[in-house]
Image 1 (cartoon, rainbow, N blue to C red):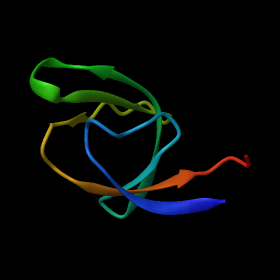
Image 2 (image 1 turned 120 degrees about the vertical axis):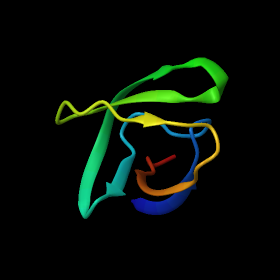
Image 3 (image 1 turned 120 degrees about the horizontal axis):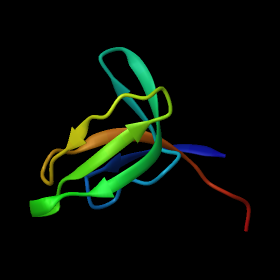
Length: 65
């Protein structure tokens, strides 16, 4: 099941799908940067930086428990 959630650099996870510029981008990997920022690696190869304060909406798949 998928749900829309609000994310920050502290809560973003691999597999999250973020809507930016009219495109959906899936987070394939991420790396911690100074001052709470994260370097995201989208599955398509783009490398955006998510700074500590901005909040974005993402779709996250929720596994069965």
